[in-house]
Image 1: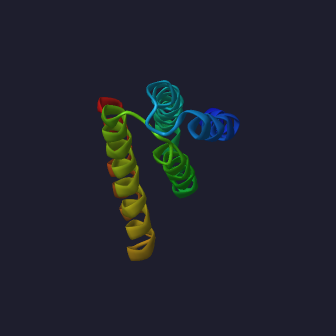
Image 2: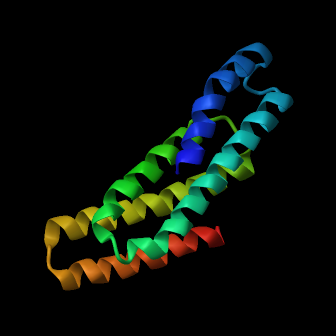
Length: 133
């Protein structure tokens, strides 16, 4: 996740300047901003997928990790990008939102090991679907 965060931190101010100079509808600006958004999305997906097996054994860390991924996705969503990439980003953000909701629901409803294990399996399967998008 750190790679996506670093990329966004470095590129957001530059994209802002480029957008002001060229205009938010300029093809060059949209292509550059889309490239940054796409790379940040890929880095986020990679981080989620690499951490999914570990989440099976560290379910207590899952809420913070998913929240961090959602924050990164929020930053990606804030970038200007081409329509096709926007749909992909929105779909992945929706998946992460669903995962976060399941985690919050499980934490509120029941703290038993069986419930947490059930939710963990569901979360892991949902995370895996991110690769399919």
